[in-house]
Image 1 (tube, rainbow, N blue to C red):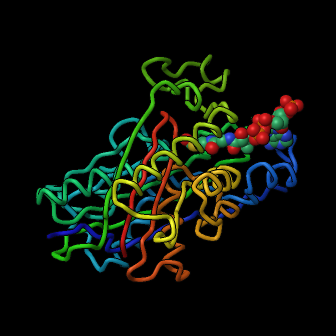
Image 2: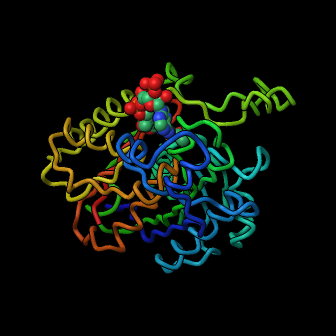
Length: 328
Ligand code: ACO
């Protein structure tokens, strides 16, 4: 029986680091408040001339090198992003051109916010299994600093810029790679996390700019509660469906939004915190990039070894959520 494996992973974070101390000079906040409420200490911010596709290309080049796959061999490219270069065309087409992925490849973006990388993983997994495609490149890339209201202390302390990528391919070896994947969404909560302007509901006007309509708006407490609930549910369902017990999982890679969300998830799943990979202290919430960025760091630091079983789990605006089990 064939499997789909993650053949390579790569990530990129912009050079500039913005610390909590820096933020305390921009808005009425403190390092102590940000660390105690979120666990975040610093985040990376892209340069003015660096767009989402620039971050995506660097992460993709690292993932292709890791997988020892050429861009010319990619026939499916999916980019998960909430901060594309522009509304039209897709960032995937821009990245395709920059990387030299051939014209016959299928290239598109998906909008699933912070769950986007797991949405891309599920789509690529299914498509590779049908033999429709041979090698997929999936990327989570965000320049969230471009949709962050830098005068709003309730949101600007949380976000950062980054990209992470993975190359997926089918192999004739059962029992490794993606064991299972599950996604969901609950549109009841669309107004908990959204960017009100810039789409067809509220096109850009001088008024929409004045009202800060082009930035992320969030009901933090509500998002917090939903995040813990949906991540616990989807993680449990995943383990039940594939008859996996928590002790068989060597590492959980959760969406990196807030350390308190991860701690609550660990407590509810009755799993020790040392099984949860955490790097949000250094990057903040980079939306669709958090999981591939964490995956890349986990592999490079030796936290994932051949034979290990990892669980990735995410939530995001929508409210979207997802989980994936991977055997390395
Ligand atoms: N510095 C100082 N004080 C602050 C700050 C700040 N940066 N931000 C808010 N406060 C104040 C508030 O005004 C409030 O003051 P008040 O009591 O006088 O009204 C007080 O701190 C408490 O605010 P809360 O919002 O209740 O704080 P909470 O403990 O809920 O933490 C937080 C806020 C960190 C946002 C938390 O709710 C959270 O992490 N929620 C989930 C966020 C999340 O995961 N978002 C996902 C985004 S994903 C995407 O799609 C990009």
